[in-house]
Amino acid sequence: MRAAVTLSLNPMRSPYPRHPRAGWGTGGLMSGWSNSTRRDRLPRNWASLRRRVIRRDGGQCTARYSDDRRCELPGTDVDHVVPDSLGGSSDMSNLALLCPFHHRLKSSSEGGTAAALARKSVHRPTPTHPALDD
Ligand SMILES: [Zn+2]
Image 1 (cartoon, rainbow, N blue to C red):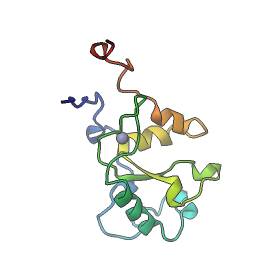
Image 2 (cartoon, helix red, strand yellow; image 1 turned 45 degrees about the vertical axis):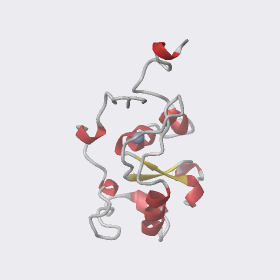
Image 3 (tube, protein in one colour; image 1 turned 30 degrees about the vertical axis):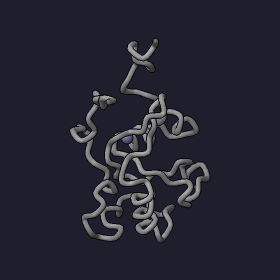
Image 4 (cartoon, rainbow, N blue to C red; image 1 turned 90 degrees about the horizontal axis):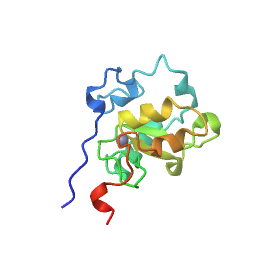
């Protein structure tokens, strides 16, 4: 049996405020977005696209660590794989479900390296466990 790796950083206890969009399921269509200019770039059917992405990705964060292991946290944020600011579309193929931690990690590193950064392991300094070497 493979033990689950404990993440050193628990996003659920993050000191940062949750993004309004993380509060999905609380009802109001488009509610909480009034202060966001990002709303203008999102398609009209974003709410339903968002639900489809959540369903497709099984409600789990799709970020992967350097060893290709998938993040095990629940996904709450639908992210543009290629940022819309860089011409990324809002098709299902360019949308992925992320946990608040990985979404913040990716969003805070805007630009072409964002995807690479999101894939990088920040939790585990060593890529392989010593016990797995032989
Ligand atoms: Zn994650």
